[in-house]
Length: 106
Image (cartoon, rainbow, N blue to C red; front, side, top):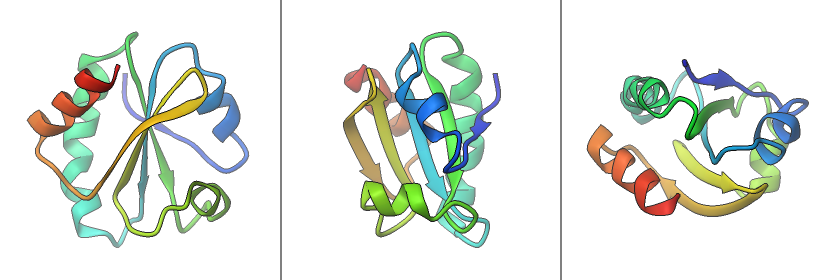
């Protein structure tokens, strides 16, 4: 399952109301570190399908949600469980580190 593009309008339905934990990647097209972790998140999305959902929010196209979440730098990853943020991570990391962060949080 590939990552899902989420907008300000679909954030609550896709993230807060999800029945599995959700990793939200706040990113932008011009962000180099965002592009670095993109492929790893796509792979993790496939590997964790059914257990964890991974979504992406483009901060340039959807400014309201990142502002509400207090995102000040990207990439910013937030892990939601039962509609609440349970962990967050700022900056790029290798796939193994991302996997470890997700595993220890859920």
